[in-house]
Length: 119
Image (cartoon, rainbow, N blue to C red; front, top):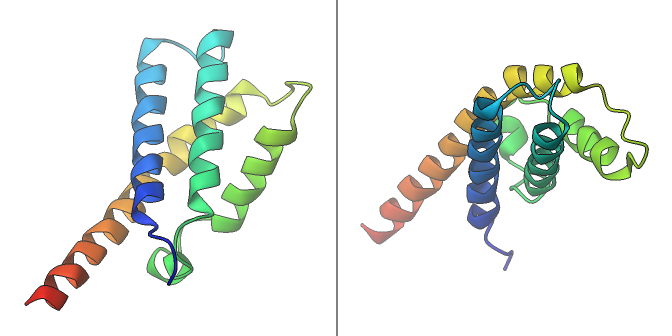
């Protein structure tokens, strides 16, 4: 039996919410503390996406799953701190909403499946 993936999905949603709160505090391109906090949460959520079920690719084919994994590797192994803050902001603005919608859809489908099994 495989481990449940739902805690990882909830962790992704939590990290997305934190990134949004961080962004609300100021400009990530101008504040290194906010930038670092956003990077940490992006790393957390990108790691958690790797623990979602394989069917995520078919359920949400518009999500760039391979690129998210690659971005995680860049975040983890970037010891020189040379990731352009504008790139980070672009990733946040372009990809977090669709990722959140996908994760919520996965969780909703799982809840519906679980309710169907109980009926």
